[in-house]
Length: 264
Image (cartoon, rainbow, N blue to C red; front, side, top):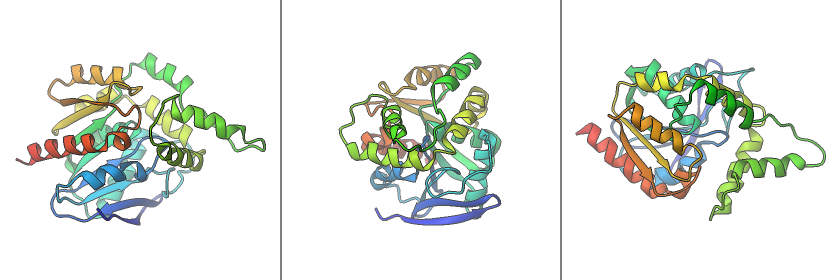
């Protein structure tokens, strides 16, 4: 499937995205930290619903503008809503992965008028204590320095010790992480500051959650299924923290089945 890259203006700067043409209610995709729209390309290539599709770079990542200072989940959701509106999207199916799932839940809670359905890969209904502990472990700030030690440190951090069959996935994620060295800690702090559970409970549209058992967020997936027994819950067959890359066909199939059901 051919996708085209472009920019759209929002009040705070330019948002970068890729798009595939189609007709009907669009699907929009939000990525994890510290990735970019590129993590969705395999899914877009295999998701054949004939609908328009948009994969955005979150502000501070990929080709989008860098926020001026600390951020919050409501800010990310509002930026996404502004970009969608600027593109003429008045209603969309939202798909988010990890941080993108947090943004998707926040957007659905804040702007239910914009969201036709939500698919969250790696939902994270953390307790306050778990958020505080996670803030100590994930998303440490780093700066380039002469020895290059930060490169190996970030490779180790980004790969989580996983054995990924396709090293080009890690290479791409590493490049995205280095680009986002200023914004990564802000995005993670926005995740830890968010009351995801409250936003998640407030989602009123059809809801799907997914996660692989080897994903670091899998324990919270099980909790999310208990909190929202009405959600369509699917355990992916693997992929670790990179399900949209390593299980692209399965992810695309589950999105397609879900959206067809919503539209029926």
